[in-house]
Length: 451
Image 1 (cartoon, helix red, strand yellow):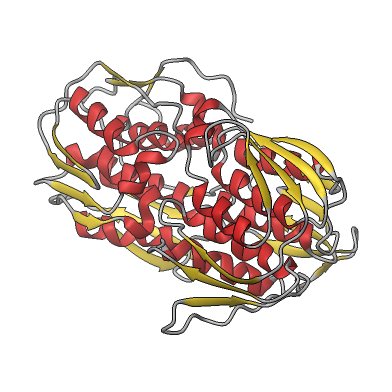
Image 2 (tube, rainbow, N blue to C red):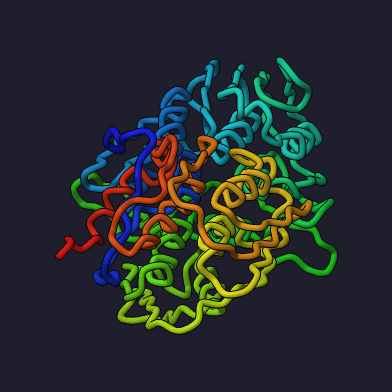
């Protein structure tokens, strides 16, 4: 995991334009989805390029508690999972999910789909306030017996597993597309075809990511028609691909994390210069690669080069941006944090659902930008940021939210005083361990020594 960092951590500005390349960790979203599908497959699967972070370790440990054999090699970036063909080996378990939303929703769905067993799930106090109702309601429609042990439709919960019957089910996944993804991935375990109706709008990129992974693991879900129904056939997962002769397992590669890439996309816009982001491509399964287009409106140049994404800012005006972030909302904090350096207002919309993520991300961002001297208009679904002179010697509250820490770290790389002295500090920088344990080490390696 990440090294021990000072708290608060003073961010040292860059004194020269950035150059070089960045190798990003594996995608959290893809790693946790692939862990679930590998466990449900009828093979042993080795994930390559996997992410090792707090969220993925929580997912792997929970699967172990459910009886799945999992071997992790952090140095090699691999996780080997012995699939059990849809069975859940252990019939009684207590699972702790911390603040990992993907793990929470995926594990609830997996336990509900088990043929039999008693499973209790809980997390940290913040997790007990995160949305679960849409998924719990849908699983109950399919026959799951789920009892809330605290506040209704929130963690902690107890599941008396009896399998899923399939058939028609409606789900409201407007508060988190992870709930729909969870239902989609376990639906093939049901006793009959499951026909999923969306009762509210959902963020499409993460759903498409899930459907693509299901396809890679051998379950084909026909694209939705005008009816809005998603039919999911019954079946068993099995990944087709190269085999590792040493372990006799099927190999499945995990893409680098496109959301983590957003911070390094923004860095040249803040300090000048350019970077090559290794293996970040236009055909990624992750919708967050579109953040490069957002920064393009601000003045960044981005182009595919030899399988990497090359980003560069050669000077000139950095423009404020108006953008609806609903489909790529994990990246809105990155733009908001650097908005003080842009010319003209930045208007962010479409992110009302982020008020119920790790923290209220809209309100938290408004508070911290105001602390830095910015004029901020907070709306129900976004922010309007009017750049003002930055106020130095401020300590940013990160709210135990990894994305706050990483976004404001990029702003702190701006040489506000012109002499390389830190002017911005972050509380709880270790919260980055949730998805990017080595973030500050990677950022540090890109700094050039003072001359």
